[in-house]
Amino acid sequence: MNLLGFTSGRTATGERQPNVLAAVPSLKLSILTGGFGFCLASVCVFATVAFAERWMYNRLGLSGAYFAWTALYILLGGGVLGVLVVGPWRLPRFYLLFSLAFFAYAAAWVSAYFLLSGVIGEWVGSLAGSILMCSVLAAGFGVMRSTLSLSVVMFVANSVGYFLGSAFNNSIQGKIGMLLWGAAYGLCFGFGLGAVLHLAQTRRESRLR
Image (cartoon, rainbow, N blue to C red; front, side, top):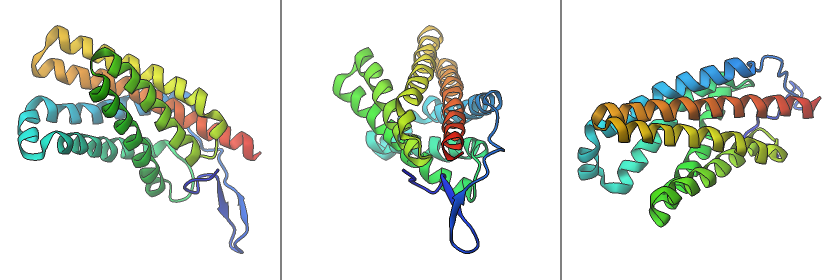
C-alpha cells in the first residue's frame, strides 16, 4: 500500500520505478535527531500549558485547547522529523502523513483518557495512540506488515516518556515540573519516532530491492 507516494517514483516517460533510498539516515542519527528535535518541540508545547493553560481553556474551550496543542506538535514536530525522510517532495508529503498519524494518535489518547480516566486511561491511550500512529505511518511507507513491530517501539518510547515526565511533574510541580514533563515526553517520544521512521524506510528499501 502506498498512501502518499513514499514507495515509488516515476520516470520521465511516466513509468513507475523504485526510489533510490541509499540516503536513509542511520538508526543512531534518526534516534538522536528525532529525540532532541522533538524534545525541543515538546518543551515549546508544554510551555503553553505551563504559562497559558487557563487562558487557552477560557478562550478556546477544552476541545479547542487540545486541538491547538495537537496542531503545534504537528507543525513543530513535522518540521524536525521531516529531515529524516528521503524521497521526492519529502517535506510536504511527510507533513501530510505526520499530520494524519499524529492526529490519529492524539484522538485515541484523548478519547481513552477522558472515557477511562486516571492511569488506566493513560495506558490505554498510549497503546491505542501508538498503534494508530504506526498504522498510518506504515501505510504511508508501504510497510503494513511492520505495523506491529513499529507499534511496539512507539508504545514503549511513548509510555516511558509520558510516565517519566509525569513523575517529574508530580515531584517538582509548578511550571518547572510541567516543562520537565514536556522535555522527558518529547525526548523519548522523539526517540521512538526516529526509530520508527528509520525502520519503516529501511524495510521499504528491502522490499523494493
